[in-house]
Image (cartoon, rainbow, N blue to C red):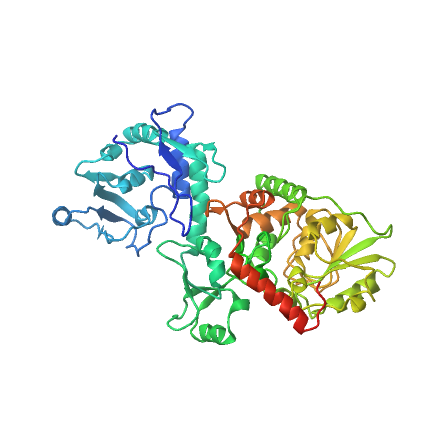
Length: 534
């Protein structure tokens, strides 16, 4: 077999800086490679070749797939094949997903230099090759296995995230991870409310092949039933109304739980997002994909163990939504039972839609003091509020009428380490406290309430009936639900990779001029509204 391109490759994700997964090696290593396992895994995961390609409409199952580039040869074939079997000839000017076009085929007729021949043979279909080329051997299963083993071991595979060698099977597993992401995005035709400074990281995570998604600001031209992604809090009410009137199906997009090294309000792009087709995780009034994951369960033991290890690393490295600071607790200021109360942005959707009517940071403090009159209460304003970007500031004299301390700046993860428990409205800090094995009391209805892990004072939806372990909650919340982008390679990655990058200080920094301008705006807003700095 002549040396053909590697069968396992990196998809052309937008803006990716790493494109190579396999490189030719001078000698073929034939040991330690199970070709049957490789074939089975490729077939079950449908990876290999340009699996990110277009997916044209298919005829009813049982068709003969003909992919022959030469027009005259294709015409002769169609003349010869005069039987009752339908022939399907996809548009040769377009790159198609090979696994899609063979999905219902009974036979594949293809040029012998087309990789589709190899993929069809791997899938177990009868293959007829036209002309000469490197894939002539595929008509025999035994020959397929022999030549495929030579082909695969003729390349050295390198993990794009670590730079370390990986096996062919590991390369297939990584491709399967990318395939699931790409397939999840295929039905989304356009994205609304995505600011230009976010697109460098959001675009690869929402890429479904063939230039998707299209970033738009106007609903003009959106058709009934069309699937569009929407960052609702950044969209005008008019655009939302227009999309509703035109019958668009909205999929919500928001920041992930491990986001970046710095504030989104400072225009630092997110390194993770969530894409939710049912609702959104912080809206307790309706189901969400995250709630469904937790309610339906089905967490295998290896996933739970992976979640445990991820949780341990997050705690040890001091990872939080906006920062990575080594975990060591500051000195305690009181011997009393100490409660952390994290403030929130009062007009944030997480508060308006998840707080069950509790939208005031001062009212939250009042309720915590009434619930724990003897405790030493520490109040920490939200970082976006401290920076002057968002609503929710409390005059210190007011906050000190209920709190013993007001902590400005610093790491929320270190502060959590220093307290006995956390009392929250819907703050993500409550989830971060659970990761650190701290008791958490909820006054609103955050996504992590109602599963048996928190003391809940808010009205938990009756939909939440399951009881979950901490690591099942972590598995759903940090592994299955969000999407992550590696700031080094620009490739979608598992959460462990982003956690490692952030811990090593390698998160995306954003546009320095834009960040400086946003911070200046925050300081000016503080002064104009007489809000104390912090």
